[in-house]
Image (cartoon, rainbow, N blue to C red; front, side):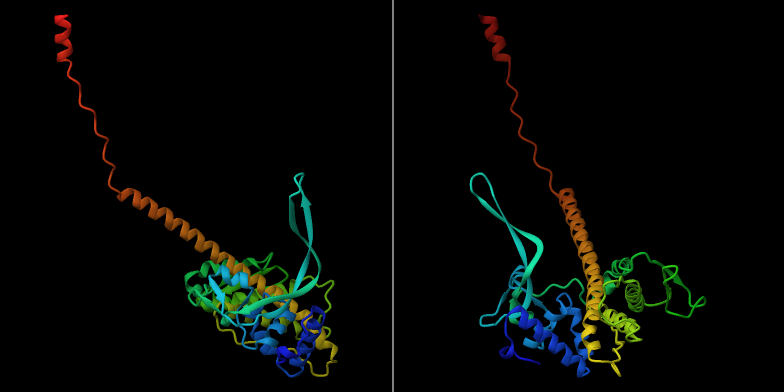
Length: 329
């Protein structure tokens, strides 16, 4: 890996260094090593993933300082930030009649600049919370399954018995159905769904402006994309997915390696959409459970609370004296 001393930290040189490093990795047959980091670093662009690994080959969970602080973690004294490329957005400044200025960030990207991030190993504080922990599959199986299925837009999901078809799953792109065998374990069923959803998204992706490798360039490129997506999503869910189909560069020109970057962009985009959908669904379920538990606890507390004592009543005033006075007047 190229170390920090040889990196020039400006966006143009950083982009060039990342592209060169990508070419070297693929040329050296290290495609699987690149795919292996996507479950945790996949939310960053390919170039930024490469830049992170060039500076820290052992990086696993990377965030900006503000994000770590939000998780109640702080940067360990003396740790140096990892540099990545971040977009610069246009600014709009609005001034009211009193001369007060308000800045607003626009959606339009006007350029790029150096950003700063830290790996979890460079931080300390409260334990890192992860909605997709090792128990997530068992605790949130139905939620995960539904979230994954919904990322295959337009597809209907069915089940079939082994007697009908011994296949674990059947993907029908013509009728847009995915059928999963009904007797599979939870883990096997999720793995099958992940693979089928990955392939459905690969085959159905709009590639009108795509500049990467196509089946005309490399016969197994659809399988390469689908298997990497399945590996990334499965590993993020702590499921065992070993099958990673490698691109076949035998008798291919060097330009094919450069074009592969766009295919990895597809892998990253689809896998992150599947992961984000799953994380979002679990977070929503946990929030709703917390709200329901709070309401239940509130109701139980109200039901078991001792009734408030009634306010003391004022003693009745005797009218005997008044009557006597009236008589003697």
